[in-house]
Length: 71
Image (cartoon, rainbow, N blue to C red; front, top):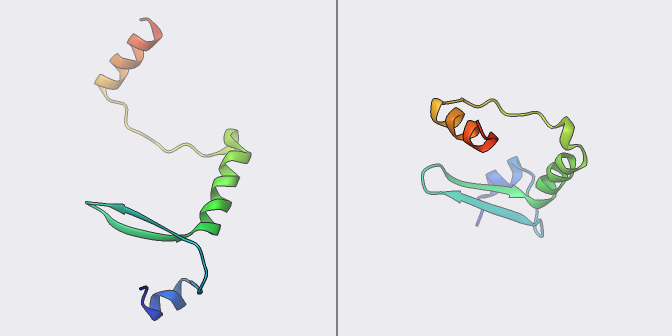
């Protein structure tokens, strides 16, 4: 059961479809399916416009990439 305060804060109503995601280290996340569906549709509709997350390039990753490119 989701506490009343949380349902009111996040506008969760009876009959809303929810998805529960969990990670042993980070905990549990609950989201409305309709919100995730809209987010996913935006990503799929314009993949070339989706912002890229910055990532750290390590020496190991560069060596692996070089091998994949045949260098």
